[in-house]
Length: 98
Image (cartoon, rainbow, N blue to C red; front, side):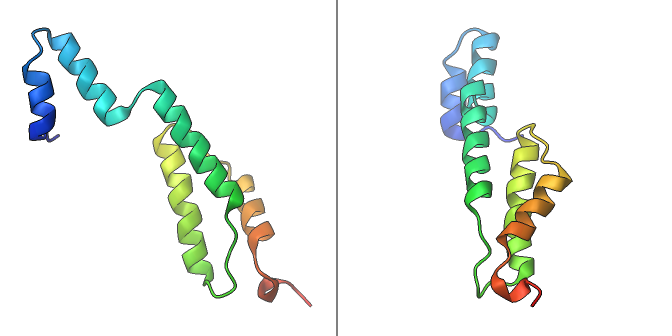
């Protein structure tokens, strides 16, 4: 793990290791509030996402996968059924049977 110069300055001036660790932890992992905020933003982005008419399925799936992976990294697993429903509801007319 790399400690950048501006972070080092914050940590170096601390006399107590616990205080330095808390600063480092908040800087890199965020507080519980920040984590919840990020999860809410990702959930909103996922719900609002629609496949564009000129977008390939691979491009659309990559965007969905990016959001799902981001949520997983924050400790929130997205169920497969939710992903499948999202894909089916988001497909443009050209993918629907006639």
